[in-house]
Image 1 (tube, one colour):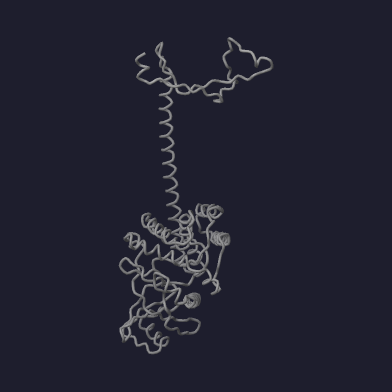
Image 2: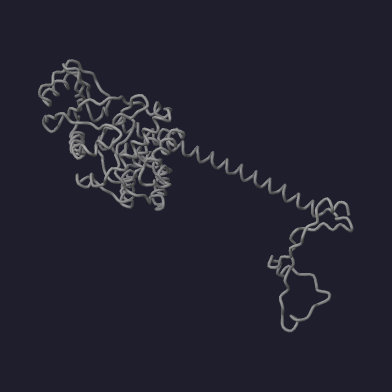
Length: 396
């Protein structure tokens, strides 16, 4: 049963001693996993309450709490954005509710972000670079997951096998993803610290600034493309390219050239993961939604492939036509009779080298037979002839 903002306010008073809520309102969050509220206390301070709806969501909050404690003040001070701070927690049965100090800024939809100014695109790129440049010891010391490039690829292959067993993934998508995952060159990257759950709901924005990054439940060492998948899914090329440019400029490590290709694949594959999650939860509405999105993706890709094939065919036809015209021009030029006495000659003339045989190599045949089709007509001997100026040739 969903908790109201006022119920969450009552829970918050148990988590933070001395907190006196004066007003409460619902806060945007993952509705399937959390009940959330924004509170205003008697001193005018704001707080955020997140209460999990099931044990798995509670575990995620507890993991995030552990991760946030790993960010020492010195590390936080180096980041170009703020991070959540846990003010208190209270356990009710198997679930733990967390209260956070309020962070300035608000979330924006992906549509709003994809049409943002270059200044905000730069802020997003710099924020991503700051996360990916975090010391890997931060993850290792917290005993969080760490994957090499090959381990990450193998993990995705295993997830693909799991998705295929549902029987609900369009075959064209399965083949597409399998071919991409088997392309080893695509998965050569330098693992780094990744947020792991970055999307528009975990970015707080104010004006043209990224004020805070939230949702630190999946911090790990892995593929930086994980944190770009939500950007690529926006389908706004200008926005993606702007963020990537500023990200590349800010990174200490040079990003690999396949970053966006893997990001696009991961964005597509996220739909399969959503389907698996919906089936595991027995959520019929989520399952139907996932199936519909997968079918729409398969149809879009088929349409794009057909369009690309038509464009390639048209380009080939245009090239063939151009080559045909060029060949016709050469034939017409060769059939023109050169006026007698005209000394204009081609710049390069080609002569065949006869094969010497026996004692005939030292003799010159005054009337050689015309070369047969089997004779060597390669350009092994080139005679360079100085061309006469065209005007002079006409005057002769």
